[in-house]
Amino acid sequence: MLNTQDILETIGMIRQENLDIRTITMGISLWDCVSEDPDRLCENIYNKITVTAKDLVAVGGDIEKKYGIPIVNKRVAVTPVSLIGGGCGPEGYLKIAHTLQRAADAIGINFIGGFSALVQKGMTQGARDMISVIPEALAQTNNVCSSVNVASTKAGINMDAIALMGSTIKRAAYLTRDNSSIGCAKLVVFANVPEDNPFMAGAFCGVGEPDAVINVGVSGPGVVASAIKRAGDCDLSELADVIKKTAFKITRVGQLVASEAAERLGVPFGIIDLSLAPTPAVGDSVAYILEEMGLESCGAHGTTAALAMLNDAVKKGGVMASSHVGGLSGAFIPVSEDAGMIAAVERGALTLPKLEAMTAVCSVGLDMIAIPGDTPEAIINGIIADEISIGVVNNKTTAVRVIPAYGLGVGDSVSFGGLLGRAPVMEVNPHSPARLIARGGRVPAPIHSLKN
Image: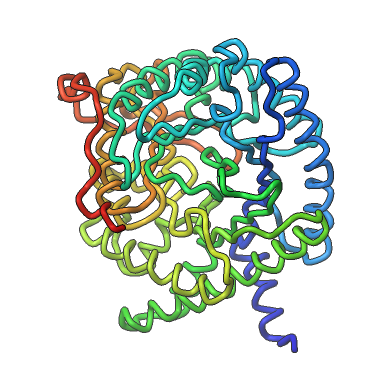
């Protein structure tokens, strides 16, 4: 039976606390599109996407109207392109990127993910060719997103792939220099990448996924912050219970939307990603949650402890609300997309080393961080290697989405607009890891990877 108080509470969450469904993402397998002819491959890809996801945007809009729940993004994620592109060469991979953009335009979605490669243990020639054109692909398209998985706990760290990503990120920044180096905002480097993540830029349809699937990402930092504020000065055990109960309610909203979307579209429901995904809107911030918990500022000593408790409580509440929780599922800390994080950086309370420490206990990593445009490739490689190592050793997903803001330095700010927000350019350690990166090869998997 529906409880009137629960209904009113949910309405309040939506109207006053920025509760929304961040994304409905349809995963689409492209395995049956494979062809030795690059033109035929692109035709097959376009047809598969536009037929399978033709109703995605309309259905999302109908569900919004029916329940009054904002659904911010409608997205598609496809099989990693490097797996189905084969030997089509760099030009062929670039043609695939343009095909993905044409398909996205045709069905009216916000983003399409899957211009991706899985190279945690080594690189095929196809993966190398695809990675070589990522900067051009991101510069020449508006909605295509790219990701590269360079490490896993089981395989170790592919340092050769990390070395490639530094130059790739720098070129993407340069090629989109007239648009705030936004190409880098559509590119993420992973360790232990999940294959059912609905959030961009890292979404793709994994090799074990069905022909099509619906994955939903919920949000609600503002809802959690308000619940903590109402709880007052209770002890931490009580506070954890408050967060768990709130996460349960948020996730049930996502479950409702996901189930209905899957039924209407005639595809299986996959997972709910219960990540607390912030926005630049005031009040919709993970940093504000941490400050409401008792920190003078996000970034203060104690931030990592507070974030660890928040992340754990969110997951405990979410898994009680849905039997299929997946993706990233935790608290996101993307600097440019979180008004509280931006403020903390600008007041000097939050630094890059502190952000790195925080990523050891949350989802997903160093996300949407602007650094000086003249940062050398080797330092970018070192930033990636450090963050990826946290994921490998701790058997968790970590990632880097860093933007060398072309022509800007520490103290400047770069604006991306919309949900991507704006980012103050952060200081990096100037000492070079070039010799370490140049050694190349593969960092062996940690001993605890041997679980068979």
